[in-house]
Image (cartoon, one colour):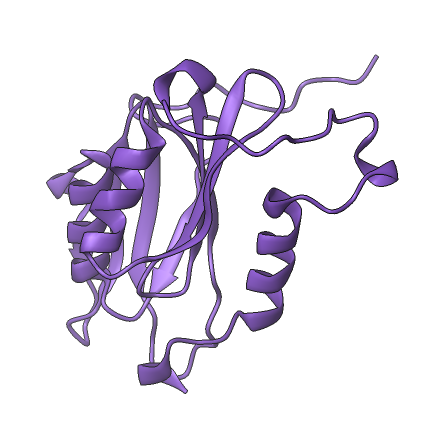
Length: 174
């Protein structure tokens, strides 16, 4: 048996917390707080000498997203974020209203969940998981996680494959 090398995290953090680096961290914070009902931990908003944010934190549910501004000489590094929500359609609507684009519409998924995906204006990709009962519209039929390789590619599969092929730095940064 292997030894557990983790430690108990501080309040509002989990053992693993995502760090998102974007051009326009303040606007990204506004996006996350509006779309996911997050709250910024103002004690952690730390500007760097150049005025860009070197560290900020937004709490979403029981997790923290760590955020900083991308420096001019840093490469574009997209984030890939998974969030469990109660109503993925409502979250998609709020995200789209703030400039996001839908990658995968709400679709049936295994394990009793629906899955949806969007790309935010900074070209980060978000996976939304919601309990199946929360979404009340037509579902695609998704294969179980044991027979998916023997079936036609699903919308859940094809949309992420295409989104990854198309992933680039936002236009303003190229």
